[in-house]
Length: 306
Image 1 (cartoon, one colour):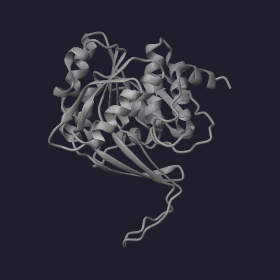
Image 2: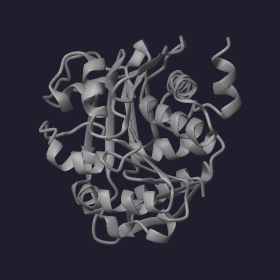
Image 3: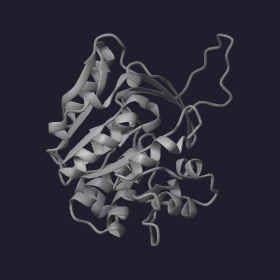
Image 4: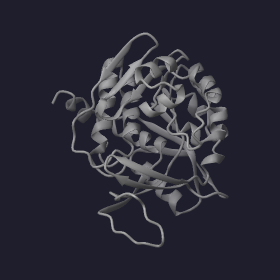
């Protein structure tokens, strides 16, 4: 396998656009669209990487329920190996409802079996056999986070590279004491701009990226319509976002991650990898949900020249 992705996988129910504010009191309102799609940062990234031509395996956990069956089938149908996707017989599959409003969204998640995912769910022989290991949703998976440094050390000992997308911290604590040990064994740290600012307390994206880069990894920050930057602690490269007709931005950052990893594994320099990643993130917004409009390799590369 080229890539092992570790983390969250769940169905997303995407509803919207919703006029704000949300009304309670048993009021029913109609919205233009709704869809049931594959969600979870890690699973969207895995599908994006497979779409870009990588051979991908997924490690995580779902419940023994119809939602878990949906996740497993959705991943497998997109070419992702799910042999290491554990079925939890005691806890349900996570479920997420996403309410869209313009370019913003509210996310409600029932975590189900997410907190029970541990490093023991990740087969070490698989870790040692791939070219790259990516983990996502760090703050949603506290038990896995506690063992993630050990997984990354195993990967690096086997000459693989590593990447981490922290995603949001629902508790709002952004505890760096548990993150810093993982950053020391992470090759590519992939936050978005809001996450980078929250993790550092700074108000400028480039400054925040530089602070995080001094903890060890190359820091690649996704910054929406402003594109992306990569910071190695001393040098910064940038890439623009593509102009596309956006339907919604769900999973755009995860598709960006897939583009970055695919480009790096294909031998691209950081500046070109960043441009390919930005293209993948932009193109993924052309349809509802995180996976419906993910680009293949040729489409991503060709979009950079049009």
